[in-house]
Amino acid sequence: MPSSEPPVSRIYQRRPRRILLVDDDPSVIRGLSRVLYQHRPEFHVNTASNATQAVEALYEHGYDLVITDWHMPGGGGRVVLDTLVMRYPETARVVHSSHVELGDTLQCYSAHLVLAKPASESEILAVIDSALGRAGLKSVRRAG
Image (cartoon, helix red, strand yellow):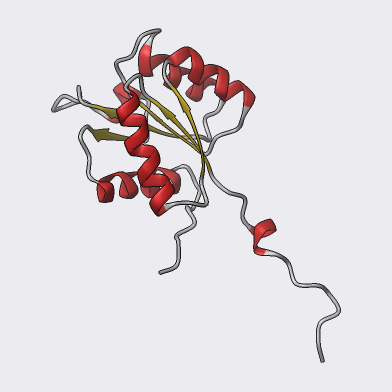
């Protein structure tokens, strides 16, 4: 006997993940965006070129993941991460920096993960999936 309830659309079962990329280097933003558009097309990606823009974006939208450079004008990644920890602690936080030192800990960055620059596509995707998992979220993997 067929069910009387209509099937639930997959669109309503999973909301697209919102990702904020923060870096003052446009080529880094383009590279990260390209990886996400190619491998996680279901993600909604926004960008900010400095900490001030990032904080404004955080106030305007809810994000599942923020990937931020550490050294930028306007307070850099510290301002972004401090805002996330204080106001949006459920948001996954990744520091993406070429200035990662041996011995740096996640606690010194207030991040879930640290990704050194440069990073391969597979490293970027693994960190995104891991950060979303640590924050209690699951990324939707593309079939195929």
